[in-house]
Image (tube, one colour):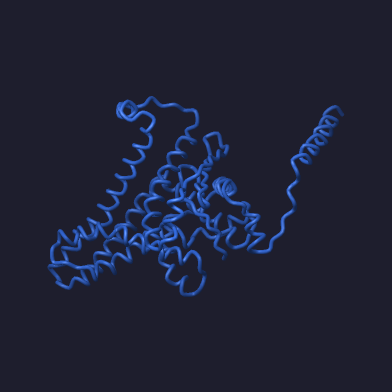
Length: 337
């Protein structure tokens, strides 16, 4: 396996792929055509931050949330196409107050609410439930470990429950298409539907693995950072989230760039968990994933440089026009005959 540097996520009926500061959202529209939207997401500040270990993890954690919400909004607009909906009272109010910035405000509020809910469900609730074990033991190491077990259990149950929804099942299928496309090229295969289909739908750099790593590392942090005050312990758990995310990012970054027995062993739990968040995609979904990759990544050049593969030279535009004219004459001759 050769590291490619591309990553992405599943969106509504599509796939987002990112390479450096370029990203593309490809969506299978209701008329079955594929629409691709290209954009740029990056800055000189991001390039500077990405050179600093731990800090880059914290930055990329927040940045990926923003880009993820933006991509989902893009996919929703692309999928709905020309269908126009009458804006509600709240949307009209935001338009009056914020004008052109209303969409960014909605995006920011939605992201903030998502983070608050995630912290509440996966940090606060496990902590409160773990307090019940104080009746059985005063050993805070054991209680911190049980808190981690509760956290992972809640996450798995949550994934299982939402996967019962048809929309989420399709989202997980596009998630599988995203992974399979990246695995296809990183294992030296030409990017086509047949090769993608036989590629793995698990990938070491997946966000699912990142979340599991966060939960495991949080157990270690909370075992050794301790105070007698329950309220202060809860506050520390929330304040330490960015640091835990930064450490987890470094771990995932290392795993994504190395392929050996040690890395495969420590990556195994996250890969297993991806069996819940990915599904085998349909060929039409794979085509969407391929379109998204090709919009931001020259996979042929990557295969030439890393695997020594050769591809026929692309015909010049003038040659293509000449071929079209010849084919056009032949077609007219056949019709007249």
